[in-house]
Length: 136
Length: 121
Image (cartoon, rainbow over all chains, first blue to last red; front, side, top):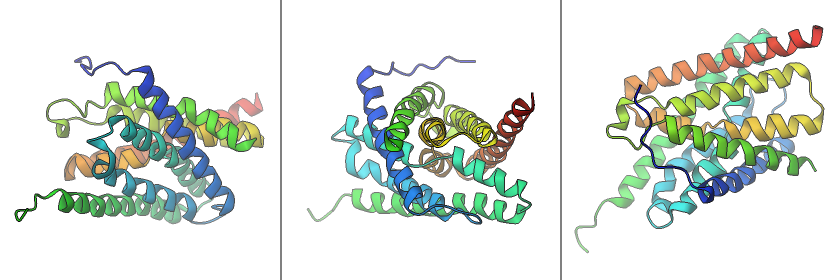
């Protein structure tokens, strides 16, 4: 298998992602603490993941070009730490274990589709903004 | 106190995810659409297994904040996963999503069973 030819990661980059990740995770914890998921459909985690996915797709328009380090803080950092795949998988597992197989499937597929919709919308928005203005 | 533990766990998990994804996802390589984001898949499955384990061990509030909410939450990502599914193309994206979700739930179940087995030993 071909080895990765990617440039080495710097300590500054790791620190940026760590700091952003801490902020995003605390925000996620704050939201789930204020509005716990409870039994049934985990709406809070659902909303967190959909919001985070949409915002990540918007990021290239906001930060990437001028501030590569800011893009790291916000993307893999804040939004990576804010959203969670592990809790999503564990919640689906717990629903299956409780016998709510249909609810588990609805949660698993519903989160994915809502996230894709958010990403699609955000991407379209970014693309429209980046189209060169022929009149200027 | 809880917020600090969550921050600490994520400050380890998030850069670890970044490192693994940076080296294995190959999204910067030519024709990124021909590659699977293997790094992101790997951290998402690992984090799901660890969180499943934590759930079975019924950790106290502080341990769960550090390892579960902080580390596992920081290690795994849904935002990058969703953007990757969107970007790698319809067929590859569907396959990547299906494998991630099915194996993710299976990993959580494996961790949960391991945690239970350890409790009875």
